Image (cartoon, rainbow, N blue to C red; front, side, top):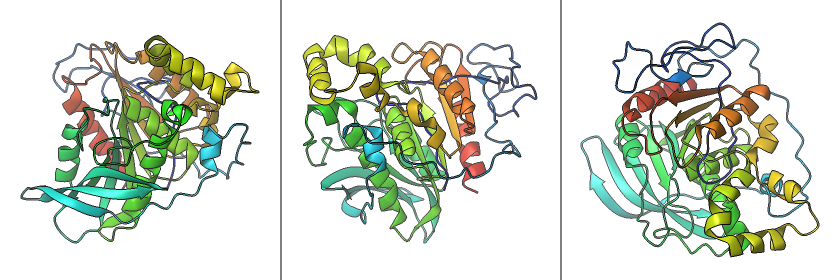
Length: 364
């Protein structure tokens, strides 16, 4: 498997180094070329989104090779991505709690798996048949845990992917739905490191199932789940074969802290730094939580989507993330949709078609 990455926790983005008119078209020859952007709602033949190299349907650059193993960075703080890189992840067999529904071509069930010492619930959508099938782990965005219900947040993606023949595991994360409570202290909860553990163990759990092709697994996250996805891929290079990120949080954790936690939870934010940042500079502590710091560890191809009218996660975040990925030699592509908002409604169909082509290429 390969790895990807970059974005910490909440609702971030990416950047562009090459741009083309259509997310389905091949990337332009010049790495600095840009295209005129069309208006939302135009036909498929009309230029619309701004895309970044490489195209999800194109060939990987000839120079793209499996990178040499990168030494683990030192663990300066136990609450950090480097500490997560040192952990061993095994997952568990998926245990069915209840069958939620039967369709003509697939079954939808509530399942439980283990993430270290925590039981995590989720929704499993399994195509009918013996398989083995390719699989996708879904990481949802922020939804208040007290009102969250199992499988909430990525319903469109769940149904579309399973009908295309993918096993889908939508993780609820710890502290959500039927999962065990999030027992971590303030620091671990605020940094979302527990959620990253749960997404990694979701992949490891799928690998144990005989109906899953363990050599063809991808990860998709949106908003906060984009940060979770990219954090997982930085922590465990080679975890999956491809990754897709929608309207993600920033790959610099301090952006997310300033955007949400400082204004909304000032007391908890001060306590977080006091408890976890002792002996370190402000910048050093947050660098250890930022996937952008470790993009040289990423090996999977990454496809990112963002809208210019996103008022939760600025599109500039994605542009910056994408640039960092490309500078590190990661096979990264960003598609920017003019006028699209955080929820991705008008252009979702276009984006999911591009996603499916991307998966067809990299999970072939």
